[in-house]
Image (cartoon, rainbow, N blue to C red; front, side, top):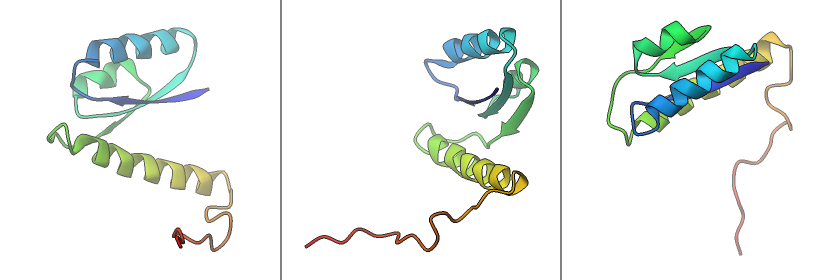
Amino acid sequence: MPVVALVSRDHVYEKMLSNIKEVKARGAYVIAIGEDDMVEMFVDEFMKIPSTSPLFSPILSNIVLQLLAYHTAKILDREIDKPRNLAKSVTVE
C-alpha cells in the first residue's frame, strides 16, 4: 500500500519521521513531499519542494499532491474529469 507523507520542518518533524519508519517497517511504499533532503534516506520516493515560509509550504505541497493525483489517474487510465463538466461554483440566493 503506498503512503504519501507531507514532511515539514516544524514541531512535528521528528514524529513524522518516526511514523514514516513505522509504516516502512510494515512494508508500505512511502512517497514523501518536503523541503528537507534528509527525509530521502527513509522513503522510497522523495519530491522536494522549495524552502519557504511555513505559511506558504502547504500551498506548494498541495500543488505537488494535485499533480500526483492527476498523473496517477492518467497512468491508471481513470477518468480525470469526473463527473464530466462539474460546475465549479456555488449558487446562493
